[in-house]
Image 1 (cartoon, rainbow, N blue to C red):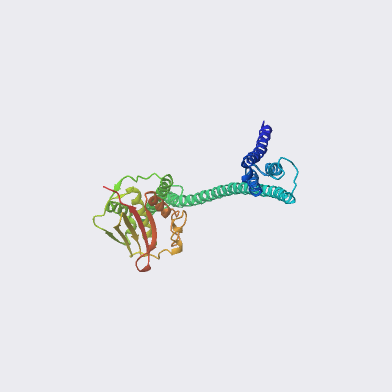
Image 2: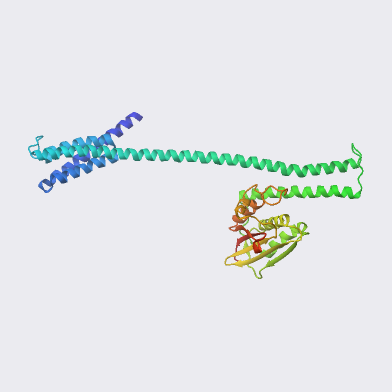
Length: 370
């Protein structure tokens, strides 16, 4: 059935080419002496070119042959005979025949090249798509590996400390090994357990926030006060700020912002935590907020070493950490912060602090109508 369909398609192309020549011949012949040999030859050549373009080389060659016969029989004197009496008409007939064959071949060749180019382009697109998918898969596997390594490290470290502290406390209570601990020693181990538990809790919260960013589950239909968001973040960060000065400058009568208040408070807490972690004790951490047009800016600035311009975009990538060595964390904080802010039609960027010192992180958030 398929071979029959191909044969019928080829036969239709040849028949269409011949029919086009015959129709053009009939139309030109009906005009009689009102058309000359040049007009006739150009018209028939046009039919040959059209056949080559739409039907291919072989139908065009057949059209050229039929056009040559029609040109000779119907238009070259004496008409309705195969005889060519005048030498100049013989030259015209030969020129037409050669031109029709060459034109048909060239047009068909151009069509084949166009089809070949289209085929190559489709293959290139498929190859590019396959390469892109392979690269995406490779990056995904790399991300999974990095995440597994980071998670393993950040879970194992606090758990090791907790396990060692609990074991020591149990031994002091009459375990397999007798260890004597006074009140101060016991308090020290309990403090380690408390700190490492908080560290685990922060880690889990970070992973939950990352999952929320990936899922886009933020409430962007609620309205919130900037003062309340900043207050929530600072109250949570209070234990981290006992060795720093904190200054808050919030413009009066700020409009409400259309954000998920809990998520933005988490972002500000993360920025304050970074400022406390990477700036020396005794320095000042400044939070300020103001309105500009239909946006509200919230900035957190510290007096630490700052972040160089070439790294200010990289720090928003997952698992990227800069600053002092030995700082804990997965390097997800700023990646999560950007995801949260951008999910709520906002922006986040890093600049230098006052006088080119320190780091200033600026959130830009949309104003909501009351």
